[in-house]
Length: 437
Image (cartoon, rainbow, N blue to C red; front, side, top):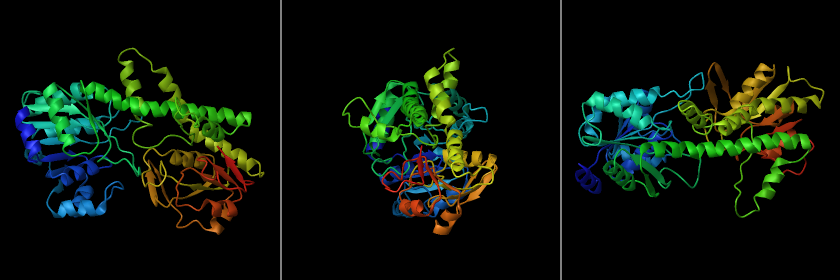
C-alpha cells in the first residue's frame, strides 16, 4: 500500500478530500487543486458549498482568480454529500474545535466528521486531522471511530495522521503554500506517505515527528508560547501604567537586543481561532494526569481580564472630562481580532463592547473590514463612515484593532478623547486627547 500510494502521489493520481471549507480547509483545498490533484471539498453548510461550486471566494487568504480557475477546470468541487468520500484517496479534516460554555474542549465537529468519513472510507486511503486539539485525539478518538465505522484496520488498510494547521489570516508573507508543515502519523509508513502528499502540494518544508501526539502537542506549544508571552506583557502593561512608565517604549528598547528576546505587545485581550482557545485544550487534558498547568492558567487569567481592564481605563479617561461611563457615547474603532482582516472570531473588541454595554454606555463601532457581527445574542452593524461629525459627537473613541486603512490623524483631530489599546497613534505629535494602554 505504501509504494502504491507513493507512486500515485508522484503521478498526481490521488484524489483529495477536505472536510470543512473554512479558513483552514478552503485554502488547503485550493492549493491541492492548483498542484494538480483533483479535490473534493466537504461541508455541512450548503451556502459554502454553493459558493465554491460557482467559484465565489469567501476567504481572505484565497485568491479569487485561483478559485474561479480551478473550479472552471474541474479540479475543485464541493458537496454536502459525504458518500463521495468513497472517491477520494486523501482526506484532511479541517473542522472547528471550539470551547463549550464550561471552557472545555468541544470536539463534536471532529467526532461527527470522523463518523461521516468512516461510513465511506475505502482501503488505501490517507486520513489526516488538521484541527487543533489535545494530545491523543487522533489515536484515542479518531482511530477507533474510523476502524469501527469502516471495518478497516489502521496501518494495514488505511493510514492515519495529524498535521496541525498553520493559518495566520492576513499574513502577507506566509500562506498555506509556503508555511512549513509538521506531520505525525501512526506508523513509519503512514508518516512517510502523508509527508510525501504534503510535499507534492506545498512549497514549505515538511517536518516529520514520531507520533500524532507529538504533532498535537507541538501545535499546542506554538500557541501557548504566544499566550504566555502576551499575558506577560499585558500584566507588565498594567504595572507600568501604575508606575507611570510606557510599556510600549520599554518593549521598543528591549527589541534592540539581537538575541534572547522576541517582542510581544499588550492589547485588549486575545482573539482568533487558536491562541485564546488552544491552552484550554492542554489544561483540560493535563487534569487527566493529575497535573495543573499553573503558568498557562495564570497567563489565561490575565489575558481574559484585559477587556474589563480596558473598560476600567476608559472610564477613568471619561472621568477626567467629568463624564460617567453610564450614558457616555463610546465609538469603538475595530472589531476584527487583528489588523486588516474581516475575521472577528473570539475578538477581544467584542468583549470590550459587551462590557461597555453592561456599564450603560451608548456604543457604536466602525470597522472597514467587518460591516456586521453576531456574537451570541449581540448583533451590531458598523457605522457607514468615520466622519468628523461622528467623532465630535462621541465622548470617547476606543481603538481596539490596528487597521491600517483608518486615518488616525483625522481621528485625533476630531475626537474629544481617545483610548488607544493598540498604540496605533504612536506617531501623532499632538497627544493632548490620547491615552495609551
